[in-house]
Length: 200
Image (cartoon, rainbow, N blue to C red; front, side, top):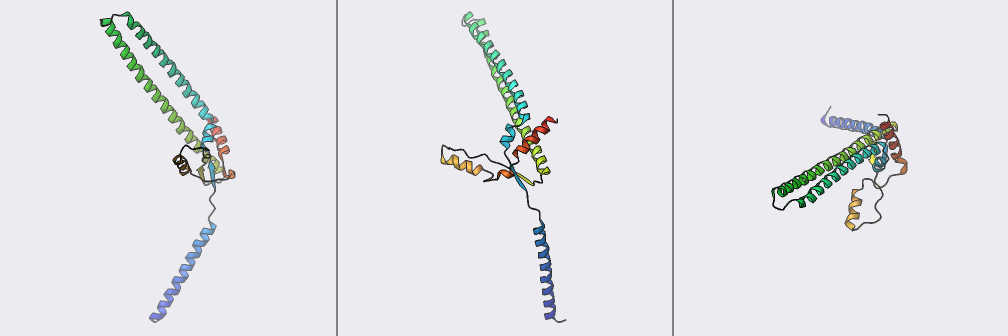
């Protein structure tokens, strides 16, 4: 076999292999299953969560207890200040009472900051727990219905904006431009999430 014949043979085999590979890839692409996509309105999910209602009630109870104790501390401070007039200015008792007022005021302010920080932490933990439970419910619904991807559904844009910059920012923050109600699984997720919570 001369060089020319050998070159023709190699070229023919290359074309044949390329055609076979291309055909296999094309068949694989045609056989691929379409991706199923759904959307969820997480704000609606959070608002309708039974767990949120229970945890918020617990946080509100703690907040009311903090407010009640803070009021008691304020009343104690007011009583100390009123008693200050009973002592002669500059006397040892007067100076001692001023120190008591300053100490009580400092303690009350720091105690209130600490308790408010604890309440904020509880609120943050509530959001994290809600999100984790929502994700579990979304996964359950998606798996049961053959859904591959679940996206965050944005609420409608506000009707009024104070500035063009605010309107632009709202538009840029949107994750989905449009989605049919047929792919909205929010109600199913709410039902699943509350069922999961009751089953605990």
